Image (cartoon, rainbow, N blue to C red):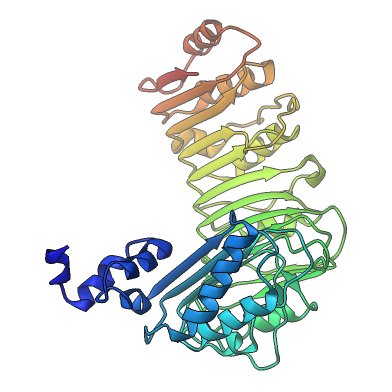
Length: 417
């Protein structure tokens, strides 16, 4: 303790910043020297998810008393997570009002108790000039005022929040000139979203996870480099998806009536993860070429996955890596029979080097696909088959694939379970 006591206050603050906030606050009991050191911490995190009602009350009293006295001139991060309705919305709003006034850089508010919407965001949050990261999780009301100015906001996470009206999200986005990372997850079911409009010229990364039925779906992001889209709706609605010329990676899992528009906007990708529901049929059609696509990960849970595979092999002349798999939590179904291409796709003749199949069951249509690729892919270096419960034995599957003709004399076949 004597050695630590000799350290400078600046160094002590830095040491405490590596500790959980609750532990850092407890050091105030060590001595008078330590009593107020924690009040200079640039990062504060409070997690009351598993607190009892009495513990929540103690936390409320502590924050009411001490948060206004916090001394750090710039608050780098403030995170609060809670679950039970023991903390009142008006208390939370008061705390947020305090931290927003401290030049907050990163703010996270997470609430997981399924109650009515929470109006806890102060209006001053929407004009916070130094805010860089904002994460909201739970039925938190997003009531965006007319005056919005977030000149430094780069990362925005909106998960299961409640929008006061259909213009709230777009009004917020249009006033974030440097926003480059946006994640929008299914809104609170008590007030479902009807319009999703993402028009952000600066955006580099976009994640959308939606199940609700929309009336309007718009994506206009000319600088986008990464897209993750999970969207389930078979209802016709207004849909506008602009081309994304800089897009390099996309993960798409959809039940979507406008699949052709979507595919047409992502043809520049180098890496594509794809799961098209059977209801996305007919397929996206001819006329699209994935000239840049090098790595394709295709989910084979839909019945039509073999047809999608044929289409993508034909449309991806520079494909180097092919992964067949089933996305987590997807229910596997027996895919349609394998209708091999009438001509061998260009990628099999000149570029495909790696073929992986995770969850291979050895069923006839699966066996036919694997054998076709082995027989026609001239540049294959590695084929890895990961099996699960099989209709035929592991040894029989290995023998069947190992003995089939291979176009590549250097191809190594690896079988695992």
